[in-house]
Each structure stands twice: as C-alpha cells, then as structure tokens.
Image (tube, rainbow, N blue to C red; front, side, top):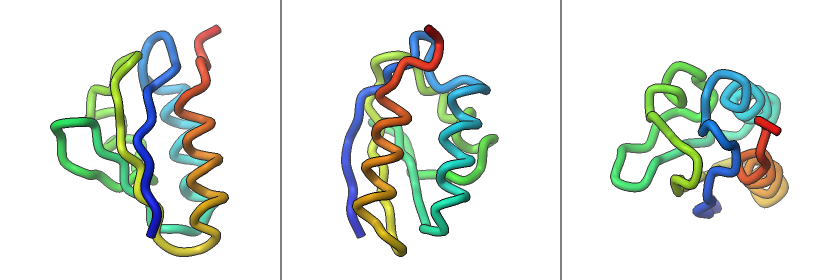
Length: 88
C-alpha cells in the first residue's frame, strides 16, 4: 500500500470532466484506490459520484491510497492527473 498527498490543479476543482478522467484511470488500474479530501473521509476513488460528492476545489489537498497491482506506477499516474489543470 502506498499513499501520497497532492494539491488539485484543475482551476474549477474536481468537477465532472477531471473526476471522470480520474475515476476511469482508477478503474483501469485494477487496484483498490481511495481518495480523501483533507478533513474528510476516504471514499472509493473508482466511484465518480463519491469523488464529486467530496466537493474538492482548486488548491485543495487530497490523499490518495493505492493498494494492489503496480502501486507506485498507479499512484504516480493518479497524482499527475490530479495536479494537472484540465480546465485550460
């Protein structure tokens, strides 16, 4: 199991489009992944509804935990997705 905290890069936060990209990458990884907004509870990162319900805004920090599969590679990919501004 590996984890990392990352700051959200998308200008409008983790809304529908960046959340979809993130949850699709989680699903494709085959790993068990949770995401947790600072001060919140961890949720299944493969669930777009759970991710959007976190209300994650630009600049918020989230912690990603990856368990199973090629954990470090999956974590690196997910961190890259979340730190990139998909609203440009």
